Length: 72
Image (cartoon, rainbow, N blue to C red):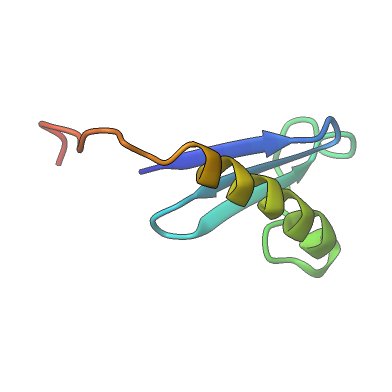
């Protein structure tokens, strides 16, 4: 599992690279992160904007971690 998380102060996006799954939260309206806006019409603009940051971060810092050992 390879997670990347970005936030802009009001929105938080977490992206899992291998499955392309994600979570997006409006931290002002939902500080407990209970309402996932990923792939919803109301979260689309923020998701696109924050995914640009995720893509830039991944490009700057290629993943070179060893595969986990002993985990099944």
